[in-house]
Amino acid sequence: MDWLKIIHILCVMGWMTSIFAVPRALIYWKRDFAKTGVALSPLGDLTYRLYRFSAGLMVIALITGIWLGAAVWAFDTWVIVKLALVSLLVIHYMMTGGMVVRAKKGTFKESDFYLRMFNEISVLGVIAILWVVVAKPF
Image (cartoon, rainbow, N blue to C red; front, side, top):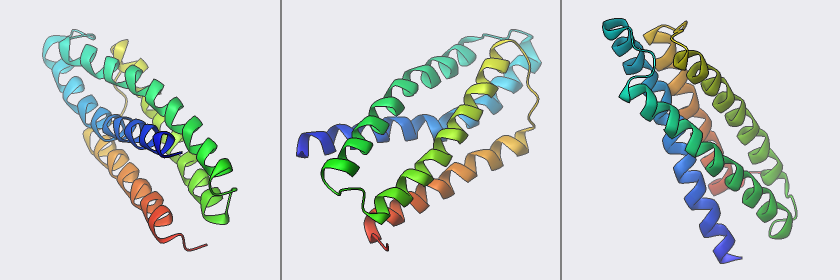
């Protein structure tokens, strides 16, 4: 099972990169669009590709995480709590995806402040997940 844990951790790391970077990149994409009027600039293309690539990492992280939760820890209470928190992070990620799709069309509804706060929410979610995994309080 060590190989499965390694795959899980690697995919989570890649997915987290996108969770933290894409909302921030949307701020810069929005500013770039305001200056140039070009919706899919190189920065926008990079942001879109990062989001799309990390979607695959998310799927692999979820599959391996559920597999580990069942096979290694028999869905202990802490695993269920972790999965619930991860579900919230998936919702956050999907909301980010909606923003990326709109940005690709040249529609930027969210303010810079909103995007910064949105980004910080994901940090708090990851801290909560790490606490549950490390402390196993339940």
